[in-house]
Image (spheres, rainbow, N blue to C red):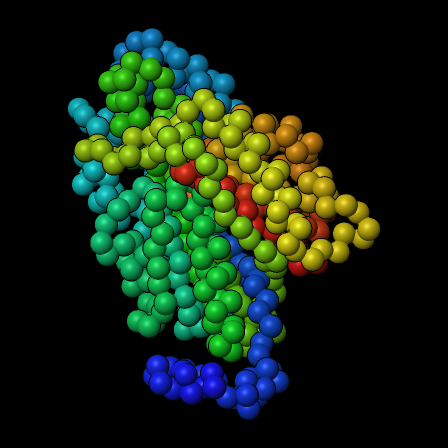
Amino acid sequence: MAYQLLTRLGLHKYIWSSNLLSQTESSNLTEPHLEILSIGVVYPVGEIHPEDFVAFAKRHYGDSSAIRTTLKLNDASGILVRSSVFPLHEEEMNASEAPSIGRISRLFKEHGVKLAVEACKKAINEWGGSIEDITHLVAVTCTDSSNPGYHEIVARELKLKSDVDKVLLHGVGCSGGLAALRTAANVLQGAAYRSKKGRALVIATEINTSMARCALDQCKEEHRPNIAAVLFSDCASVLVLSNGVQRQEFEQPIYRILNWKQKTIPNTESEIQFNVHANGWKNVLTKDIPYIAANSVGPLFGELVRETPLDLGGQLPHPTNFDWALHPGGLAIIDGTKQALGLSSVHLAASYEVYRNYGNSSSATVISVMDRLRRIPGGKDYVVACAFGPGVSVEMALMVRSR
């Protein structure tokens, strides 16, 4: 009866026969094993020290109340040095006015693409596979907007095959590294379901320092301090993600991804913004961000561990039984999350170290933290990666180390 009804509706051709269904169920569909096989992180050689930034800001913007307060935030940031493609003494940083958004885009294509290609080659070299085996590319940035996107230039420079499945994410800010990882994981799971091999380049590239003048312009125009001027740095971070199909003997995972989740905190869209402007993008980072971020992690962590089978040797899935690759959006965010979850500085050692030595490189930072975390001896078997972005969006991934 049902078949006759569907036949009249012209839908019978979409029905699988019971024989076909049983054949599919009994076929040897590959169980997806989403594994990070390598990580490549490249910071530019230029450095911005807090004391250098003080002189730079005063040289161009004087000694207003907003600048003085911004420079107090600079002194208290906890950052020892920020990586930059533009040292503060260079002509590019000392023009008579902030660069236009067109100029910023050209600078990104010149410097950002170069960093991204170098990070890709670093990740590919560690992986040990062939460029011909890359099947997917997922890229992200919040410091450029152009069509075609920078991912197409990177693909061309790497000489990727023309049929590589590519996508570029935008509008996700500092959560972009994990948003790109989540996107790649979903795509590679789909490939594994079809028994197709998947090896994805996940690329996060940010050139924030091209907008240093724009951030200081905000102080002058809005007569209030701007913490964004003292936090951000430049970086490209890349990882190679595999779905385990046709795994090669040389492919040794760093982390296996067990689960992931994204959540937008209601009524917080005005708390983090990155709004387009004639001279780049203007940040909105309210004083409530550390509280919102720190108090959003616990509930999402609880949801994630409840959905994920874990072998903790009889221990409860408490945050302290995991290592954390937390996006270091600012010192108050790291400290607040540590307090909210009852963590120690050891749990967040990689986040503190990357923040202190490089600053906040937006979407590229969390992958850099994952890279640093794998190099710290010992540690917990299970790792939680977490990042925050506009929305306020919280991204989280649960991983297990490969021992």
